Structures are given as C-alpha cells and as structure tokens.
Length: 159
Image (cartoon, rainbow, N blue to C red; front, side):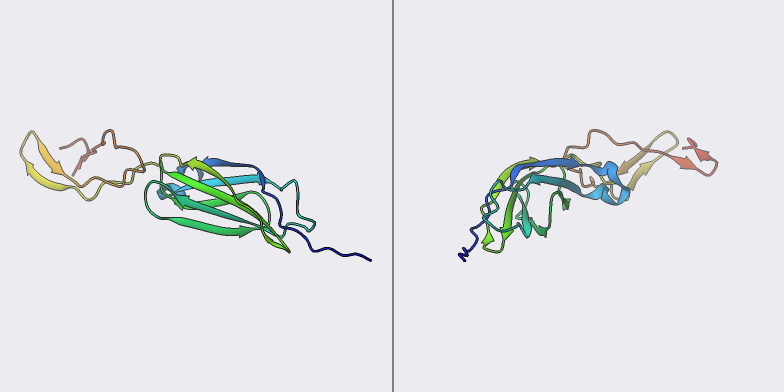
C-alpha cells in the first residue's frame, strides 16, 4: 500500500469584501467593518482544508493589522477605520501547512461622525450666542455642517 504526504493547498477562490456601515447596530457606529468571503481552493493538496487565515492590514491610516483563523467563509472583521483602504489576504491551511495568500484591496465605508466636544460659550447677548467647540472624529470624511439646537427654561427655541 502506497501513501503520500499531502501538499500545501491551493489559493482560496473568488475572495471578495462587502462593506459594513454603522447601520448594523449602534455599537458599530464608531468602527467600520468588512465581511470577507471566499470559496475553497480548487486543489486542497490531497488533504482537507483545516482552516483559513484571514489578514487585514491598513494601507493608509496606521499599521493596524487584524488576523484571524476561521473554519470557513465568511469572516467578519470589525474595529476598522472609516473610509480607509485595506489589504485583505486569505490563505488555506491543511495538514501540510499554509498555502499561498490571495490578496485584494478593500475600502471601508464612511461612518457617521461622532458628536463634537462640549461647546464653550464665548459670548452672549440678547440677540446672539457665540459658541466654540473642537471638531469630532469625522468618520473618514469631512464634516459638512453642524446642527445646533437650543433650549431655554421654557423649552426649545427660547434663546
């Protein structure tokens, strides 16, 4: 009886990313996410694929890297910057080891900006109020405008 050792698996097929935005849940509002999908390699190397290694590396903000091992597609990667470019790499592992990575690039969605810092009252008179505040984290895109709501002792619009 002849037995051969398995070879490394081939590359995963049809690797793709879908964007996740803040619309998923309020907890996700501060961070962007990617959903990475793929199909198994055409050649598993003579042994079943045990797991996939998924790496996500920031290309334009910081040296942020996320890495995970997962049994099958899809992989959800969260905690990313909004409106940022990432390199996404996926490789299959079998009993012989880790095969070659497939790399693609993905752009995360722009996120809703955070609230500005506490406003500071600069001046006020009977007709005007001047406020100053520090800009918020912009979610990956410039803030186009701010909405200022006022409320006095009798409710909205009294100032």
